[in-house]
Length: 252
Image (cartoon, rainbow, N blue to C red):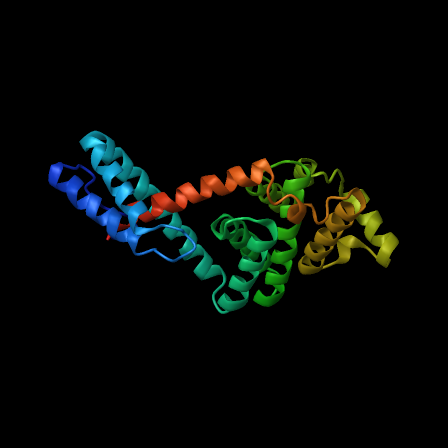
């Protein structure tokens, strides 16, 4: 790896397939006893399947694995950079949200990283993490209530927070600046426009939370953790995790 670019020869011959088979068996066997549920026998099955693919199939499989491993590495690098200094609280939050919504932790990391990075522009890291937690809770509830993927709902909420209020339609928040300003004035007095960026961001979260409390969406993420869309999302992530494990030995 040089300058962030992975350079690897994925052209395999018979000896390369044999090496890849052993790499896969070794890497997966090393995960025995972890949350992956990979056992030694399962690792041998995966290795045998790889060997049975032949040169062309194995080459395509390795490329997929390398791409997944590179994506996973990029997500981890971004996570480490954005949450530097508050790694412990960030991981506690990640694990708590993962448990609450029945979502694999890796699915939450990109959205959490995006929200934290955004909120850090106007808040200290700790306050930004609190806002991120609220945003992720909204996204989880919205995804379950409106039968959308967590990834899509997080993206819509992020766009809404950035000022694209039309994006709120996708998560059940049909509003505009006038409505938001009036709601703020009715509750607190004063002008929404006079708030600083951090105050505006916190109020927008509060505004959406209020809508979700009124329409019954709040808490829906925990209630529907076994919904079809969530299970499907977890299956896709589990496959991506597996492929990243497969591809990692070929990058080392």
